[in-house]
Length: 50
Image (cartoon, rainbow, N blue to C red; front, side):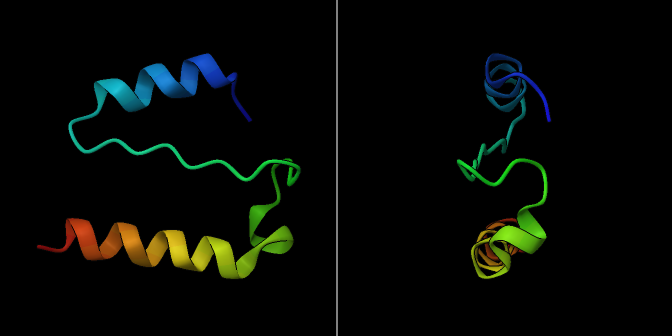
């Protein structure tokens, strides 16, 4: 949805920033890879919920 360079820069600037991509899924990750998205969200929530 945004240029990769921009996403990398924003991620670098955020204190707890993480960049996760799903090559080949365009912008519909919830439909293209729901299990992968759920896994990524679980990992994120477990890290920030400390």
